[in-house]
Image (cartoon, rainbow, N blue to C red; front, side):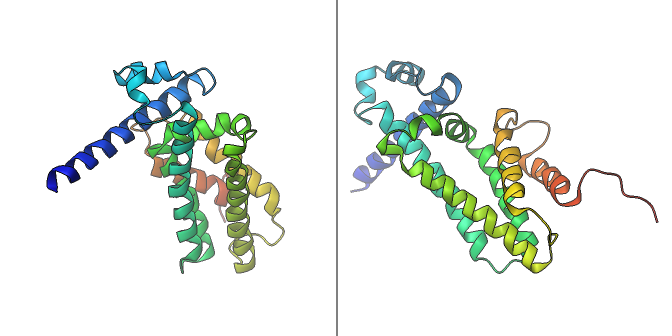
Length: 204
């Protein structure tokens, strides 16, 4: 029994390694231009060996996207369900988003770059639903903030949501894990700009 368990662990580990390699290939070359052979060569195996784990590159990108999004939205849901105040929840959501970019840069890049193309196929119809869920999360956080008095009463919630969405997730194009600033530091800078603005405060 222990040997069988070890074997399963090794198989899972190898599968995860292959998915990580595939994610990097998809993110750097583009999904359409990445072949099974590219992934296999990057993994140091023959294309036929890759088919022992996955039946197609579609299955690989599907699992890559589903796995990281399940983790991300699970954390969003935990934030929404927590007893934290409205401003803290908004801050936590921004911090979690940057942590996701730090931990899953290739997965985020694939979603940013390929969602429109993949979403045209029935298998990836869930990507549009994830976009709707993401909007609902941020709109809820912002509306709760307005109701609690943590955000301005006249705030254009829809416009603010779009600003957060576009400024946070586009960071995957330039942010590099292990760089000069940690994902936490970047998140705090974004929050300062978002919540406090960039104009110098007048001294009283």
